[in-house]
Image (cartoon, rainbow, N blue to C red; front, side, top):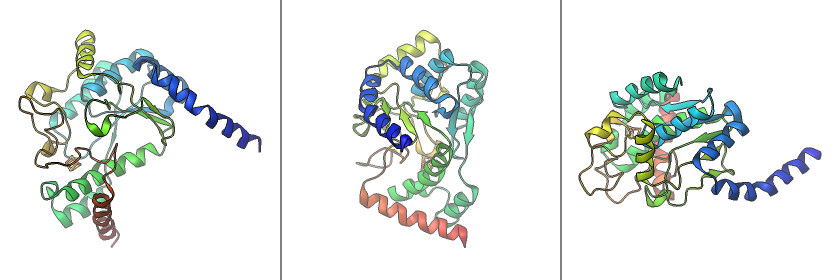
Length: 262
Ligand code: SF4
């Protein structure tokens, strides 16, 4: 009973804490996360500019920062280079999270290795197996995680809270209210390592076959799944697809998992 009362009390304080954190700086939020969650807190990064800013800030706050990355098996060579760069520069041994080999084998056997070019549902299936499911497994053991989402990146990210205390685990986007210029300026001032693909015209970096450099005037995420038009350029990690699209993906996923068990 006492435990129940304590839980209700903490729940009643959540909106206040959430509001206070919304007014905090990125560094203050990261310090709070380290103090509150200790080694139950991890940064998830694909070594894009935002993730590198977070790692740089965090390395000034704690010597025991944890970072993870999703190795989909289709990453560009330059991203593996960044894992080494982070180890050398910050002393952080990035925890590499891989998809379930059996699930990938089953998907590739049914739909081929480059299924994502065929239709959006196939692309989302690939992201589900290579990204979302491994991430879910990893996060089961974490209390909080930080990501590099910024509100101005896309419409779907425009209402990202800095700290989502109701998510499980707690989801922290310390740069939610940062502009691209602020990110660039932090990187210049602090000599933060850059993913080599930025120098080749990329503005967003993901898997090799699904990302290209952008042309002048194109949207920041235009290089992601560039062959798809009028669809949400998200992979399911941060936002789920709308009901109908998600149902199609769920059916495809069931088939892949079923074939794996067969
Ligand atoms: Fe598959 Fe492309 Fe998604 Fe990577 S980004 S998981 S290769 S669909």
